[in-house]
Length: 115
Image 1 (cartoon, helix red, strand yellow):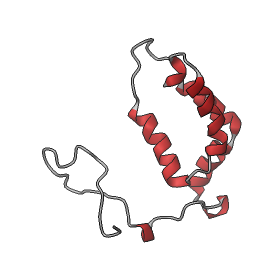
Image 2 (cartoon, one colour):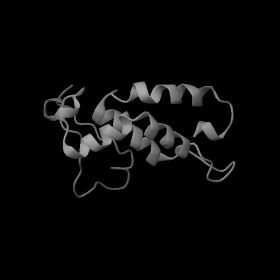
Image 3 (cartoon, one colour):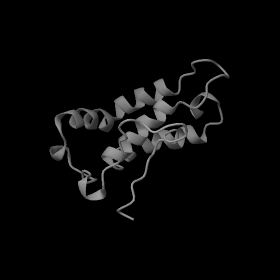
Image 4 (spheres, one colour):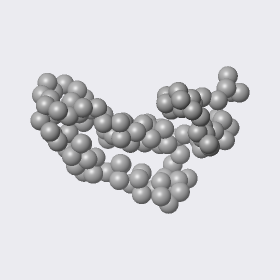
């Protein structure tokens, strides 16, 4: 299992292969999960501080749930990558701050909170 290398990009190899293909590092080479703030790099600490702040998260969620084009909005892969990257790099550290917003948005039947 650890010897397998998985390619995340579904379009690679469809027509051609990239000159340089990047894949995830093996488990031993990846940073450990559940790091404390002291163990993070300076750049990671900035992200950690912002996403640990309930006021910042509330403003971000309000912004992300704004309607851009009424009835024509669709799935935004960049937003998906934002949250995927947060959980990949910081594990579930921000879940206590995000969970109340996720539950509220999931229960709402209106279109705008479903972004």
